[in-house]
Image (tube, rainbow, N blue to C red; front, side, top):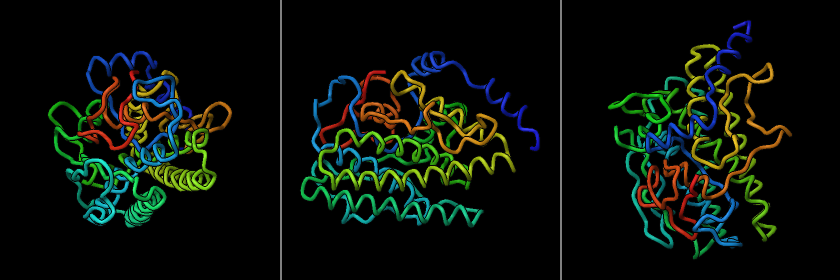
Length: 316
């Protein structure tokens, strides 16, 4: 693709206006996207505390680290996290679905293995920091069933049609698209932690996790962009559709981006006009992982909700 201008114009033409996207997903009754975590409050959602404690914030992050870690662990190794690091306060739930990816690209397999181990480390670190107040893993749906969370999200994003399923474990490209969604939300999550965390030790730790999530996100986005340029533009189109769907669920600002070229080059780092990463609130993230634009307490990747103090999504 020596001449990028036609591709840039084509992708620009595919992006619908934000309000049209939001209306579509409300009509459909489901939003689409996946997520990791966000750690600061937006507005005054029903669940929000005026000043959540450090433990509330870290436990919210832990719920979503369980989700990421279980997805990557199954994808890389064919099994989930050990039960010894899943207990805690609240109801412990099972993992629904999950299996090893049939990787064809050895480099993508190595990426999956590295990220899986990093995400397990995040789970163990947060559990250690929280001590006896650490929440248990809630029920997590990472299945590839037709009515599972991945398929529901992919169908709403237009990646698959009615009656079809999206299997993130089927091949390298499906795995990368699922990972793309998790990692982008994770970056906006930890960036939002800074204003709320009082303990400087915890703040430094959150900054450290943010850096790792940013490395992961850049790795996944770079791989998808390269494959999209060299192999199939449909991969780049898929990231735009997922991004648009995810953005239809959170706050009114348009803060989400796929990897389609912008400003005459690639778009590995999704930033605002000042070159800064975006933030998301807990309510916004729960809208995404619950796959619902309304104010709800469960659904999607967390069929029974999350554990801890911050459990309800925001009304979009």
